[in-house]
Image (tube, rainbow, N blue to C red):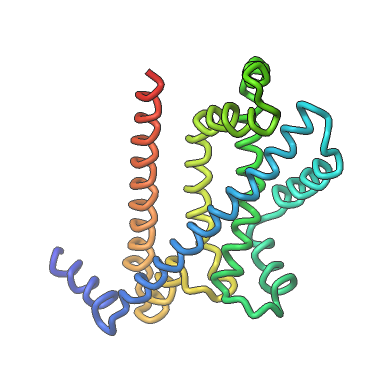
Length: 230
């Protein structure tokens, strides 16, 4: 049985250097995930601040309306459809690499969810914190930066971690625009060897290891933050 398993590993991954498809796919997956996360965080922060400011002060009405339209459209349509629209419609003549188009699409999608996560964290902070900031001589922006956002981020860190995990797995649809991501790499091996079990199970294991590793790192960070509070 062990010899049979070794033979299948040899056939699927070693012969013809087919493991390279997985290595290159993993690299593209991580690139898309990291850059999409950074873009999503920037968009999410801006939208969360605009919406929470409107909720607390009633200002920024036009920007708040624009943000609500963005959130409605992005959260109401599938990420795959958004990816296809970005590639075939919006960014079709830009000359950008496919990986760049993909992380833009995934970042725009992630930004909508990050925005609501951060906004919920901001709104969960007691209004007394704003009053405390004003009593120290801070204006609204300074109060938000130095008092509210640090507390809000600490509260929503687990939710942001879950969003990263979801984003990592969502990139598996990048193959629809012919990007050789991790999932596509496994599928290419399957098409060459006609053995679906080994390459697809390997892809699943790699995703699982990445998710477990990030979850462990996130739990360590949360534990250190709790210890700092003491």
